Image (cartoon, rainbow, N blue to C red; front, side):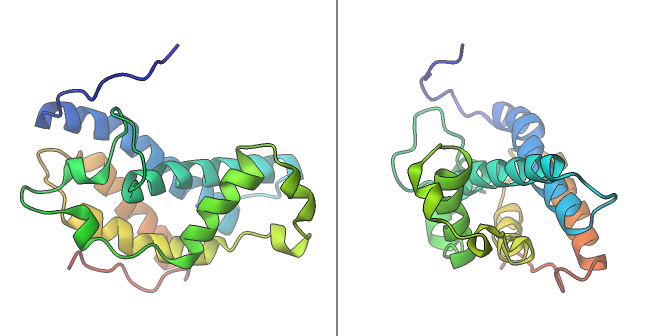
Length: 182
């Protein structure tokens, strides 16, 4: 059982190992689930589609907390700030959270990971997820993060995974270009 632990010593080697395994896993699965839903490789049953959507939204929630955890992070929460080059402050350089990502964050809490009575109030049409918009809005934030990260802390697997999936989405016409880090 995992218990809340104290913040570990965030050495470069610790962050590199963590990001190579855990952050890369979240990024890879976020994009992979989105790709399966947006560019399906088969005719999925409703159950498989729902499982992909659950995976996509849960990985999105994890990554969004990592990128935008301004309220009450726990001592052992991984945060984007920890991976930046020295002297940079993530909350000052990151883009504001786009509305599509704010909506995703709220909806995941009410419709996916918590069993709430408010689910009864969601109309059939409001249950749709604008995955293309979510990906389009996520990409600049991810690019800003990776472009300002310290390569001694952020594993190349994270960057390679993001770049590979962005190429997939560009070829599919879902995003036009990958923004630079600016």
